Image 1 (cartoon, rainbow, N blue to C red):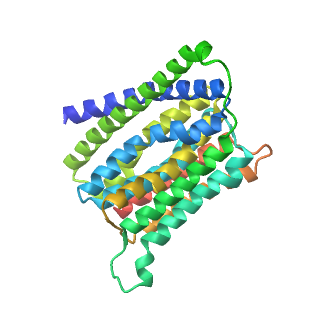
Image 2 (spheres, rainbow, N blue to C red):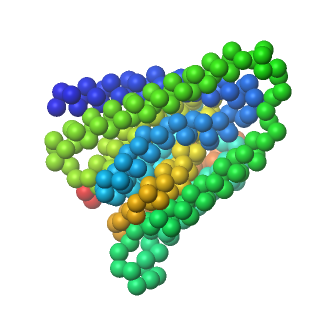
Length: 319
């Protein structure tokens, strides 16, 4: 009991410190090479903050606990939009770029819809059980490659041409910050999950509920801390890009990789979570569309957090 509490608290503290390192390093790289902070948020930061989800889902899939693997991703994506973006918007209203509204968020919504279609494809065949098969995993990974190709295309030609000798030290420092941040986020996320799951086991909570709540929240703490720190530092593009990129990474890369390793049985009740995942992303588009300056306001930030509280209550009642 005491060990679980120490792991959880220590992991939370490490996440905060590591997130600050990651944001500092990502911002420095963006400035050095002329790459937009949004691209850094969609790639470097979102990949780093998604490592805990990847660790939990892949491990759970290999161990045959598909409920935890799937619930972790869906719960994390809902938490990312409603809590991470909500808290970041409360700290600092978040202007959203046109490319995010027109491309990245729709891509995230499409990824969730694609997951729902693939997971329920058995309904159109004679196969009675729903699952995310290895072929489905390959399809998800293919769409992930398309997303990375899009990022590469949109960021091409932005790199600077300054002398590598004159900029060697700043670049090395930035990369060191990113590596320290990613490593700290990975270790901190693992500590939080191990501690929280240990406490949940003692309280007799089932795996599906753990995946959607404690594990999903625990593995999303890197996104929360990274985006909150970025918002506090007025790096709003990194705050937004981190969430959108992480949600795409979670579905296409993490579930794609996990399903590619082992087939994941899919519970029909998880369709509700996919619908909520899509609806929460649509709420972001609504927030932007109803604002005067394409901004997620503090009011909508508070609304997002309130909606997550209602979702959490529903999940606990369902569990």
